[in-house]
Image (cartoon, rainbow, N blue to C red; front, side, top):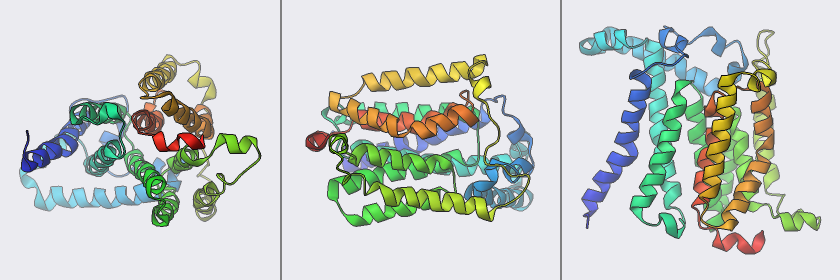
Length: 336
């Protein structure tokens, strides 16, 4: 048996160090077709003159981290200056540091979620770590399309999933208030914040009550919707510029004609199918179906204005379905 110190060391190595090394290899060990970020000395202009302009928190962090990396390279890190100069730019290194930091936070949240009321199947720490490792690999594989907002948004989203579960288990209003505030703040990061509403609805909305026109279970979702809509519309009012658009483009035709995008779509479908088959009980499958149903507006927007090839867009759904598949929902059964 491991001692307490051994468990802490092993947990640190598995939850923090291993994910960081995987992330490091994905950013510096190979290159993808998205190479312009690696050659940009400063944050690219398109971050401030396109739909990315509404993602104000990641853009602000990118500017500050680029300044910080330039300072380090010029004045503080002369002993690794050659390495940094040969393997990227101040902007790219800053991008890596920020994304790896939030990636490790994502790993911590995933670890906490998998330990929160787990099903019997993953109660064994060895099985739980295999599921955790699968989740980490899914995050890492999406980094062939690095951005300055996705990892931060993923951390905010997973934190919202954790708050949703904590609120359900305890009914402590502070978790609900934190969730509303988190959705409002994460809307300034990326539109992924709306998926927290979909997940909350999947857990709390009772379809049997809706069939009887009883909307009591719908009411708690309404403040979450306002927590997303008000910042979302407010941003688009405050950041008014002829060069800034609501969307980068409409790609629905390309999504169903390009072999790359079709490959991404098929990959997403297969992953969702196998996660669905991993569900511990039929009840978990019902919760997963509800989550996908409430996520349809997000999926519709991906189809219209996103590219299926960038499977990072499906990542929140993958991770959520993994968590749902191995969660213990026994105490939810009477309500669905």
